[in-house]
Structure formats: structure tokens, C-alpha cells
Amino acid sequence: MKVVQTKDTLNTIYLDALRIRNQVFVVEQGVPLQREIDKDEAYAVHFVLYSDDQEAMATVRLLPLEKNELKLQRMAVQKKFRGHGYGKQLISEAEKFAKEQGFNKIKLGAQKTAISFYQEMGYKSYGEPFIDAGIEHLSMEKDLQ
Image 1 (tube, one colour):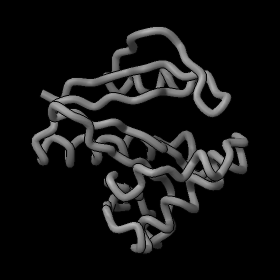
Image 2 (tube, one colour):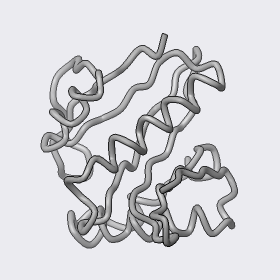
Image 3 (cartoon, rainbow, N blue to C red):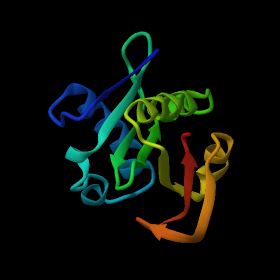
Image 4 (tube, helix red, strand yellow):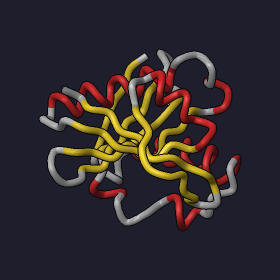
């Protein structure tokens, strides 16, 4: 398995990320497509985890914020690959990339069902729950230093 990343929204890596996101967020969770693909696509770094036979398994994107911070977004694992630690592997690689690029904090909005997943990865919650795309979320962050 390997993780690759791109900022090129015409690249096949990005298109693989979109396919996974469409299946997970639009088809499975009912998020409107126009909400899923947003103005930040071209500003984010898109990561995809591929199997040894080059099947796209999981995706996440990192969006630069201000003050050496990033926002982790659009974390999705294809249904048939869930429960095997691939999401953690992907996020670990994204965090490694973030550190190498000089970022020191990652923020995210975790869906209620994913809070424990992010806690296991060292993310801490803050603030009050909020609704995004009709789904309850909680703000979380992790210091990379």
C-alpha cells in the first residue's frame, strides 16, 4: 500500500479521491454533491491510499489555514476497506507531510460517529457540537510538535 498526494485537480489521484468522496458522502450519507465539492478543492492537498493492486481505498484532504495550521477534511474510506486501520494509516501519512511542510496544528470537524477514531489518533475536542450538511460534528485539533 502507498499514500500519494496531489494539488492538481486534473490529476487521476484527485479524481480517485472524488470517486471515494462521492460514494461515501453523497451516496451513503446523503450530502448534496454541490456541498461536497467546494471552492477549496484547488487550495487543498488531496491524499489517496492505494492498495498494492492500485485500488483507491481511502482519501483525505488538508486545507492550509493561517498561522501554520491546516484543516483536515473529507476523510473517507471505501466501505469494503473500513475497520482495517487504513484510515489511521492515511491520516498518519498526512500528518507526516504536514510536519515536513512546517505546519504545527491540524484542526477538523469530526462527524459524531468518528469522534472516538480521532481521539485514538491524539485529537482533542473543543467547543460545542454543530451541524454540517445535516450531520452532527464536533471541532477537534491536534498539535504536531
